[in-house]
Length: 385
Image (cartoon, rainbow, N blue to C red; front, side, top):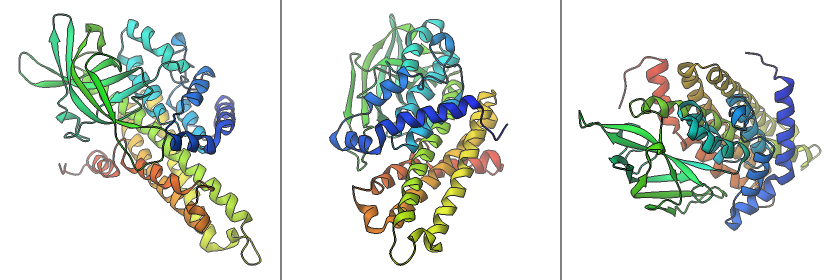
């Protein structure tokens, strides 16, 4: 692994950064506070080829990998416009369909995901299952014409802007009676699909929903991949999710750190700018160090995943997600502290980042579950749950 990015990736960073600055945090914040969404930026990013850099060229993508896609999200976040649906649509859903979809499914969905004309949500979390995918109760039953899907999901992002979703359900093994996880593509406007917005104390244009699936009739081709290999297929999408969640958090951290640095260089109370005082400078320097460490682990995870090492990528992706979530929280908090009273104002736009950064510690997997993973899989300690 080279620690010097290729000229192509450097050019990608620069181009995406320029696009992000064209919109900027003020635009993003206005969309969030007005109940709007980021479709305008999403569609432009898609037309420029940024949303599909990781998807196969034969389906309109860039033919790159998760390393390229993480750059796109990180740079948009750094510019103040973190696109949460990139964690889902371009990453999880695009990856699963690319790896396990039929030729027909790839042709149907991947071109739209690549150019931004199609957005897809990912529905896994349930009220009583939490992070335990083995306890999912959303059930798919075979019918004469395909499948009937029923269940309930919670904290599903972007259903208001998505045309379809990848739903994690369970099928029943007729021989054993056991329920097995399986993945289905479900149009958001299908009969029997309803969703209600969850009111959040979070200033974000990306909305969260409770999803209700009531005897949703699906054709046979709605099933993605094999019934028997779905758990493996599900986990194949979760490594990209963690890598992209890291990019999301790192982008927020870079944005907050940049605002703090710009302020403390100019703000003068006595004879020198307050950034000259170690009480201000040292915490920001620590954040810079932690930010670079988190980026390195994210880049390692992306490199391992793109090389086909799912096992190695799993450990690195979890560690990257942990580190990125932690530094995002520290960066936004220190930005507020560095700006003092101004840090609490809407004008300077750092206080609102604190809640978004806090979410990076929780979703899509909590820091506690990551610590469980590292304790069990990296250290070989007994499972605690």
